[in-house]
Length: 77
Image (cartoon, rainbow, N blue to C red):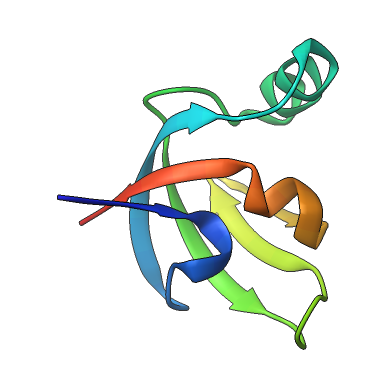
């Protein structure tokens, strides 16, 4: 398995969150959105060069900013 940032994951691919390289505030924000270590997410799309990244986590569809998505490290399937 390959460890990559969420922004480098191709659209319509699944990955498992293995690390969040941010502070405690980011950890708590993502946890409230349903994104945590061990969670399987699907990248839906990536808009533009530094635009938002749209993901599906469980039954929720979320748009994350480019900077936040860059701090989420996933294991590609």
